[in-house]
Length: 148
Length: 148
DNA sequence: TTGCGGATTAGACTCATTCTAACTGATTAG
DNA sequence: CTAATCAGTTAGAATGAGTCTAATCCGCAA
Ligand SMILES: [Mn+2]
Ligand SMILES: [Mn+2]
Ligand SMILES: [Zn+2]
Ligand SMILES: [Zn+2]
Image: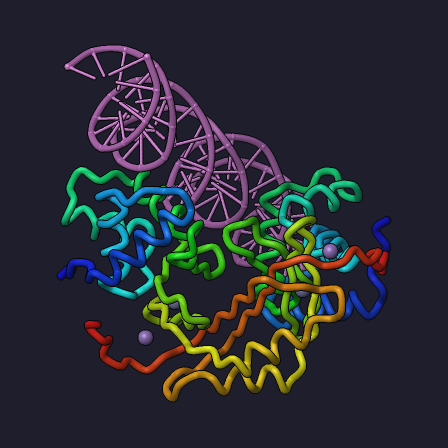
C-alpha cells in the first residue's frame, strides 16, 4: 500500500529540509511517503489517517506541522478549491488543477510554458505576479486512476 | 458614500431574482447596493458593516443569505484566495483576480477570450470544464483606486 | 552527565461559515 | 375581513478546519 521512499526521494527530502535549516525526522519521512505514494491530493485528515497506518502514534498536529514545513521548503504545494479543506500535492512541475464536480477528485493538468506566458502577458504594467493559480471545475470522464 | 442603485441596476437585480423564483427585498437591495458601490471585493463582514450604515437592523445571517442568493442567480461571483474569507465581486465579465501581497487588495484582471481559449485547450480529452478560476498573487504598484 | 533547541504532542482555542428555530410580513383562500 | 401560507429575516448555537499553547521528547554537543 504505502511503498517506501526511494533513495532519490530520500535525498530530495533531506536536501530540501537541510537547505532550509530543518531536520529529517521519522514523522516527516512518514508524511512525505504518504504524499508520494498516492498522488491524489489528499486533505490533512487523509494524510493523517494514511500515515497512522505505518506510524500509529503520529498526531494530527504533527501532520499539520510537517505539511507546513514541506510547503515552506518547496517540497509540496497547497491546493485550495473554494473553502474546502486544503489539499496537498507533491507534483513540482507547473500545473493546474481540475476538480471533478461529481467525484470531488482533483486531477493535475499539465501547463505548457506557452500558456503560462500568455497568462503573464495579460497583467497590466505595474503588476508583478509570483504565483499563478489555475483551477478548473467540471466533469471528467472516469478513467481508471493510475495506481502509480 | 453609498450611492443608490440606478434604474438599470434595479432592473438587473429584479430580473435575476425573479428569474430564479425569488423576491426583491429591502435587505437584498441594500446588500446589492453595497456591492456595486465599491468594487473592492469585500468580505461578508465588510459587506455587513457597510450595509448596516444604511440599514441598521440588518443581520449578518441575512448578509450571508443575500450573497448566497446572488451567487445562485449569477449576480455576483465568489472569490477565494487560499483559505481567506470569501470575497464577493459583481463584475460579470470574465476576469481573473490579482491579490496584492502587501495590501491584501484584490484587483480585477481582464481576461481576453483568446487566453480563455488557450486555457481550455490544455484540458485532455474527457475533461469538460464549466468554471475556470485564475488568480495571481504578487505585488501591484499603488495606483490610486478609482472612486468609481 | 547535563543543557540546549528543534520537533512532537494533546488539547484548548479561533473564527468563518452553516444550521436551527422562532419571528415577520406580504399574499392568498375562504 | 380573518386565517393560512410561505419566503425571508433574525439571533444565537453549532460546526469544523486550522492555529496556538504549553508540556514533553530527544539527539547532540559541551
Ligand atoms: Mn475524475
Ligand atoms: Mn494594490
Ligand atoms: Zn497537483
Ligand atoms: Zn472580480
